[in-house]
Length: 404
Image 1 (cartoon, rainbow, N blue to C red):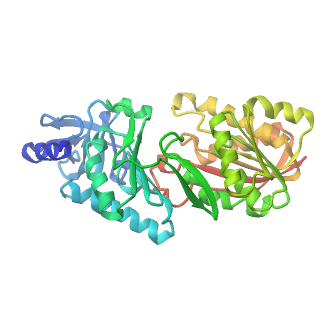
Image 2 (image 1 turned 30 degrees about the horizontal axis):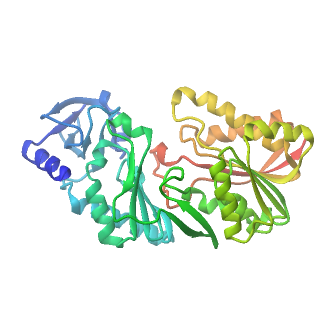
């Protein structure tokens, strides 16, 4: 209903945003974000969530998008065409996103909509078989939540839809944090299958949308180096990398995480796959124990590090880099000569180049020689749009480690 009212307002009063004549080239090149300092004038009595026509400085049509005067990103473009933004628009966009995943082979579990990369800025939808979890992270996208749910029901006839809008970024848009059912209620503890393994997913209380789908391809990348290895995994969360290592033939696997609840679920996941005789998980702080374990002389054939984002603010990038360097230095010291370090960063503000430089500095300080095995981004159901840095956020690296 709210979406229909806002559409009618934009239709009747033809609200427009005119850009300055000199704007960032990225807008011409397709980036959907328009900041306040790039706007020359706003015509009409606009309110947060309104659909507006966006014009270049010479008056030519740039696109249509939703506006939020309260947000740092004032306008997010939805289309470069002169088309209506309505229920059918969202149905088409979500159908296009689904067809793309089908073409590249992601059908059972996948990120169905990845925000800007699927031309639906600030919308995240994860598909866990017949269950869907969505996040509407901006005021303008939240307005269309009913339309998005309607589209999912039309295309998939799902068993359940749940919103995980319990994220602080919504408050910057003038929205409340919230979570709950967007369909009939269902058991939010489900089991999914990934790479032939089964994992519990807690849709209601798990991190983000309940499970990290972005590493599903990278977990297969450890297949050969895990065979016969003694493995340590830090920041294990619910044990997905570690259980893959055991499945691929590791001799022993220890996973550590600061969260007691995550460790409990990791042990349950190991048991679910009949790998609890190989995998063991402990609730400890990785920063506290890794340094001590290195001094004790512990050594592993493979050490895996998958820490959370160390910063979401540009002001704290240096602090994040210091954290990445320190944890990777400690990890390398625990790797046997000829063994492997498997390391990741999901901090989108740290570029791939900066991440590799940080690993290189950690190796020098640890007095280790490293040889790159593979360097990847997130799984392909999280597509990368060149020129949109926020879509290229995950760095996944495997290196062989040896002494100098």
